[in-house]
Length: 349
Image (cartoon, rainbow, N blue to C red):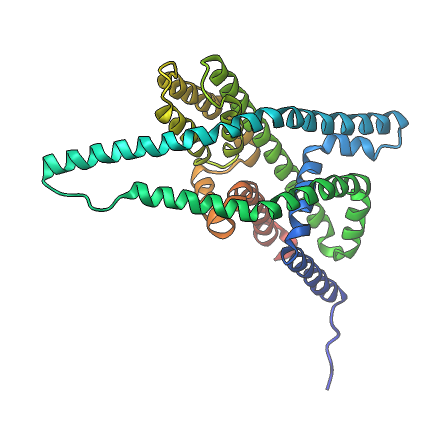
């Protein structure tokens, strides 16, 4: 009986796929490594010009790369360090607003209960304010319980992210060469092209979202400070961070400011000006910043964007919402490559 000889490319392809799946499985089972490595990898994509200069043989280019890296790290860390005092002082004032919030909710509840009784002759027996206060107390206790672990993780990330970032920038080219050596010869060009496209789209998208969030945060922080609204710096940071989330981010970022505006008992607090400021900031974002920076990068139909965000949130929560759009753009590119290979490449027939 004749035994068929197995094609060496088939063996290499099988080994390559198994190797990739093992690496993915190991990383997803080690979140303490996956999260800081993922953040460092994203930062390395955002620092692509610096990374390219780092690989140059020119001494001037290497000096430029080191100087740029140090400058960028300082530019990121200095505002954070300077902002810690402002955030701490504003956060300490929150405890004075919590009783005001509870009192505001109880007054509104009594008013609604009275109106329902007079108009519909119906007695509301459930008190949602008590449940909300109980939920807030329970959540606060849980935060204090998990706070040491959260601080420990942040300190660990503060050490591991710069370490990973340094070695990704320094040895990233060597790692890519080793990765391509493991790739079967018949797909090496396509794999390199897809890998390059994924890095480009993902890095450009995250960088664009960072710029977009920074613009929204700066506009809202300066605007709130001008109208002398409470917690201007803290609310500006909240608006910037939540803006990273597609669609729901601006709404989530607006809610804390709305609560502060409704609860604050200072007659000088201009609630209308605050609402107008958020509308202007998000209009600038949606009409100018998003089309110019983000939409051109992903090049996806709006329906695909919405579906990818929903699926991303369902499978991976907030992280899924953030990475769903560039991942969908990459899958679209992958589908186009497969379609081109199967249906338009004459050699495949």
